[in-house]
Length: 115
Image: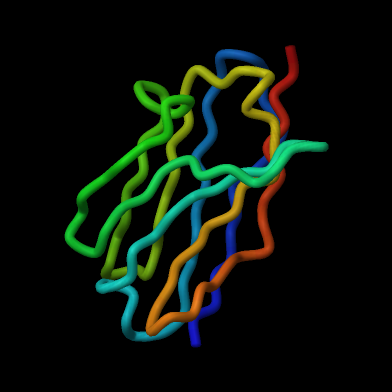
């Protein structure tokens, strides 16, 4: 079983930056694909970015050029660096992984971008 805990959310002005962190439990982190999702009020949860165990990255169009996903396998941590934030980035951000057919989600961290 994998437990995920996000942190780093908060209130930021338009154009500002935040770095979200996701701490994973267990000894298998280095093989886990890690993703970030977000859910804005009244909208469905949407995928933002993912990184494989070997570091390959992929981004949603809304994140390209502004967000950077990374990981530190020694610390069991995944990160989402968010720059040039816009009001439409306001959402609860979740990290997600899956292993042996099971998916795991964190509890989420709120990001609010004020205009």
